[in-house]
Image (cartoon, rainbow, N blue to C red; front, top):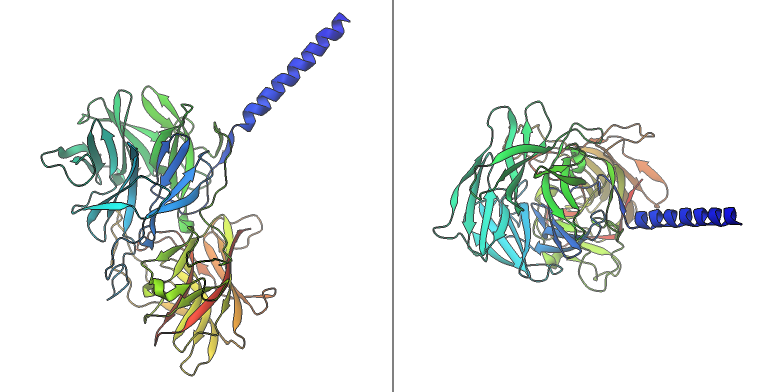
Length: 547
């Protein structure tokens, strides 16, 4: 009997231990990098209570500076935008040959102080710095201040009634702003803080994030040693104005690619654990986010596994929600508005689109003449997603007029598009085009050359369209899977007359991440006219799926 009692207690204790392990495990979230295989670069992350908020770069897309929310650091959803459009000018209205491609909103810094959220970023088409603030981060279109000075990749630090920013490229400077962010503080600090190494660098220090943690001030930045990979370097000092010493805190190839993981934020949880959000340049899909564990080692924030990026680990937070930075859409709205996953290419004309004029359909009207999709107003976009995905629409061309072009595009500088074109005599054609403009060269400091001249399109499909509706699809292969015959960063177009039997366009697009646009590939719905205005194209749905 005594042996039985002992065995019973052993079994009971074992069961209790197993339950405890399982219960503890259930409170952790599995992290597999990248967090979401899509373009979310230049992040900054803050924690407010148990909520985490992240801002990212979207440059010329409107609305801009998306705010994403998470409670487990793995699953993120867009909840608002900082602004609707930066300016109502020729640049954002795509007038007189002007645009903000490769420019616009860059590398925002996000902070929360005394009940107010602050977001600061440069707009380098305007050569100005913008500071936005709000008390409600879930609401879009914040109050803004414009500073007539360009603070490149600035990181904010609020401390003891002061507001400092560290900014620059190579030479990192510190500038003191007014405590409420309403301008530069007259007579405040404005001087060189860190002069990063000049020799042996493809890219000198930029992408600054500024913190005061414990005894040290920390400046985190990205650089790129010659012969190496993009690297996260930390500078620290016990004094605000230095001198600063440096150490590499994250460096190494990652996930089968030679691109390093760097640039982003560090933050803690309410439980006291520390993490870093860093992105990786990942070819045509864009710059994709990774979450890295962080360990404090002799006062240095060392990321990943002893400074090497990691693919998988567990986050000490309970799983919460799902990723929603892209989504399918049936366009079934009760009022004219769109899901937050959508962004327009530059500023839209809101009189020329609707999701209520024809219930369950997105209607895009042609209101301006355009030579090609790159200078067409009201092109609606969504991020693509890897390792491979497809985007599909059903389009009704019955409202199109001579000169109209409408359809679906794999949108970047090198693009392919498939859709309907209406000839002068009213004949509708199913068309496909691929655009590969002349190669452009960029120096190590990412200085862009002139914009390409002409649209450079090559026609790869033209057949008469004998019905009003047509199904269009673009497949994206960013990282080939075992059953793929195509290489990385390949896109191909298909069409169907019934939604079931698909015809593939023979010519394929070799996608390429180019710095004249500086964003990952997006699927774009478009309608523009080369002749007149007033025509429209209707889209019944947009479906995007990973396969």
